Length: 450
Ligand code: AMP
Image 1 (tube, rainbow, N blue to C red):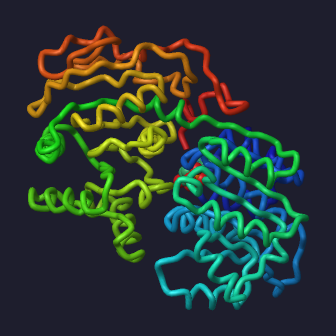
Image 2: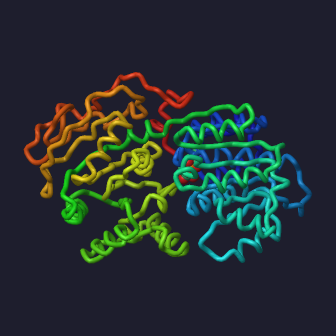
Image 3: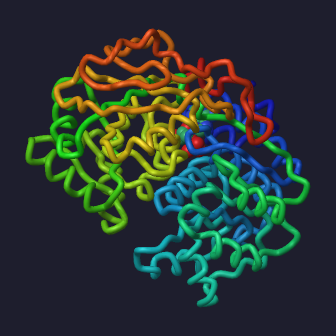
């Protein structure tokens, strides 16, 4: 399909062509027409699927079609994002796709002075991208009014919940006009989010894209059992011996992230950290340097890394395993994007074995273990028996992959000398999958290069 077939107006088509976009991604194919028709939308999709353009293009077009007077820049579209980084990316996307239109977009988020933001707002904006806390502040100060909002996007709703913003989000929604079009996106659909969607959406169309499938099809997942005190050595060893161009390293804590950066820098490796204790300017700079490949390793906490989009990221390294299994999915979704290959490496110490179990249960894959490594720890582990459950990872561990040593199902002893896996294929392949809705059977990006 071509963008032209989606009835997109010429100035936006030109902007998409300026961006080098050739064809719409699956979520764009499925959403743009629906939103242009004026319907509410519930999208099950996460960052990396092209979802920003899926809502930004039709919103820009609708705002443009309404033909506002040239100087009438009233706030008519509001997008809520859980993190500053994602909010900035969304704003940049609106600006790119709307570059040939006479519309204004700005972004507001906390942690920085509000003066430039209020100046931008006072001079008039058509589209506002905001994190919930700062928006509420500005609303309380009567700097922002939502009374003219016609289009409302709630992005990454599940992250809003994880990050404790749902209360703020509800307060904002209460101030929105009833007569509006609402689009809500969430990678997962926990009960609270399903309830919220039922209360804010009016007879929505559902669009579901399972990026995890494509991500995992293109991503080799590996686990390294290692004692906690050896994680640093293992990381340095991998950075020296494996062909790692760029890696996003996840740490559970801010302090841990700083410590990893210290260790890397001491070893002569160019690394920076992003986390909540860093100023917004420092976070943006680190991210820019990483994207420009000026630094090799970016160490991040989950919150700081959420939604960030780094093209060509070859490796994700879980220095610490997350205790929430869905977080693992989000983390490894940073690599293997858009049809490219990626490698997701997880370090697992003895206290993290429970987390690994939960992750494997969620993804219905046994992640191959690399035992042939100098810091291999010999944990004795019982893995869960084959369990029924939904399989969002049908494509699982890259086919054809043959780990040097690994695990078979059941009780397994990992570490040096562990039995060689018969295959890297997921043990539960072929199980019936249960999904949150109408998950696309297509492989979103498998053969697409964009
Ligand atoms: P998103 O999921 O919105 O964060 O988008 C992920 C990445 O895909 C961003 O870098 C976009 O610029 C890029 N992108 C989105 N749509 C397309 C498209 N149709 N063709 C090429 N790149 C795209």
